[in-house]
Structures are given as C-alpha cells and as structure tokens.
Image (cartoon, rainbow over all chains, first blue to last red; front, side, top):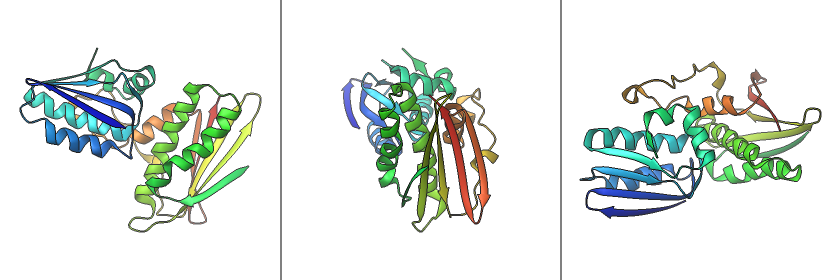
Amino acid sequence: MEIKKILDGTTLTVQIIGRLDASNAQELTNELNASLDGVKDLIFDFANLKYIASAGLRSLLMAQKRMNKQGSMKLCHVDETVMEVLEMTGFADLMTIE
Amino acid sequence: MEKLTIEATVENLAEVTEYITSSLEEKDCSMKIIMQMELVIEEIFVNVASYAYRPYIGLVTVTKEFSDNPRAITISFIDSGIAYNPLAHEDPDTNAAIEDRDIGGLGIFLVKKNVNEISYERSNGQNILTMKKLF
C-alpha cells in the first residue's frame, strides 16, 4: 500500500494505492492522526484501492467518527470489489460515496 | 486433501493466501471469487495469528480440497490455541448509526457473507473452522 496526501487549504485528499488490510491499516490510521488537525474536508480517493478487509474498515470508521466532529468525509472512485465490502457491512450507508 | 502447516503470524498471511489462491487460479476461477477468498483467508488467519496463542506463537494448519459438480473448494483452519468459536458471535448490526458502530465481529461477518458453508468444531484441543465456497 502507498498513501499519497494532497492538502489544499483545509481539504485533504488521501489516495490509497494497493491493498488496505491487516498488515497496513494501522499505518493509515497513524498517517491520518498525524494529518487531520485543521482539516475540514477529508476525501479518500480509492481509484487505485483494489482490496479492503475489516482492518481497513476500522481505519475508515475512526476517520469518519473524527471527521463528523470537525467537518466532512467522502470516498470517491470506489472500485467494485471494495464497494461490495462497504455494502455488505453497511458502511456504504454510513459514509458519503461519490 | 492437501495441507500447509505454518506459524500463525501476520507475516505469513501472504503465503497462506497464495497457497489457496494459486490453486483457484489453476482452476480458472473468476477474479471475483479469488478476491472474496482472499478476504475470507485474511479475516480468519489474522484472527488466529492475533489471538489463538497470545502471547506466544503457535502453528496453524490450512487444508484445501476441491470437489466437482458443483465446483467448490473446502478449506479448514486448524489451531491448537485457546478454544474460540467465531460463529458464536452475534452478527454486527449493519444498520447501526455511526456512533454505535463497533468494529468487533465485522471480520467474521464478512467471512460468513463470502462463503457458502461454514462450521466450527472443537476437537482434541483444536479449533477447526471449515468453509466451503462454490466457484
């Protein structure tokens, strides 16, 4: 997995490239914890995310809970395989997906 | 039936996944099914690696067996760690509001959603979780 961050004013776009699984979900959480101060809009660009497991969902849930307090969060360019997991778990209803 | 016995550590996840998915690829299984099996293997294996022998490291045996008409793979995860039946968990409420969302149980829930049959057995001090997936 590779994480790319682009901060534009108070909008942070996070691209996740590869797989978000038990081996690297904590890395994403750490990365977000270090970057979200002052961010109002968090955008996850999942165009290149091919796989997500429950550990990755945990990271997304933590991010969503935090952004509910300080702004907004959305997921965009969600791949079909990842979308299925989000739908199965009800996450698709909890999160804004474009 | 073929089997692989390996230390239950998260670092070995890729090897266990490859052990199962390489066979599915040989059988021209669809990418969709392979991705679903990857998810199943990760959730189960990481669970065993994280909890079964904590704080020690133990072994897990993964078995695979194929059947025809209909085509299916049956895999089992066998460990000698603490007794743990993942199927005894209640399914998470997938309609709960975000504040009430608890991540616990989501992994096994995804497993159940992605296989056709699943069963747990505790026998001779071993946890045996068996899953069947049609493909």
